[in-house]
Amino acid sequence: MAATTQYLGTGRRKSSVARVRLVPGTGA
Image 1 (cartoon, rainbow, N blue to C red):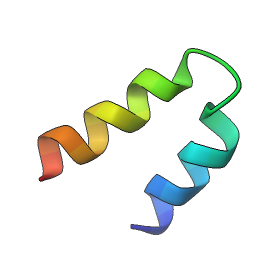
Image 2 (cartoon, helix red, strand yellow):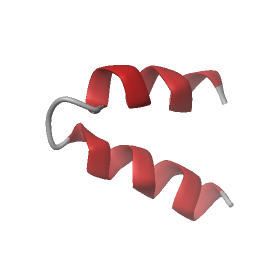
Image 3 (tube, rainbow, N blue to C red):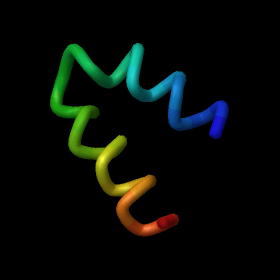
Image 4 (tube, rainbow, N blue to C red):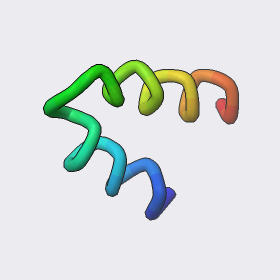
């Protein structure tokens, strides 16, 4: 979960946001 939060704050600016969706989408 910690990794997801970091991505949200760091990846929210660039296309990294798509990665955040992939993590919870595949994990859930």
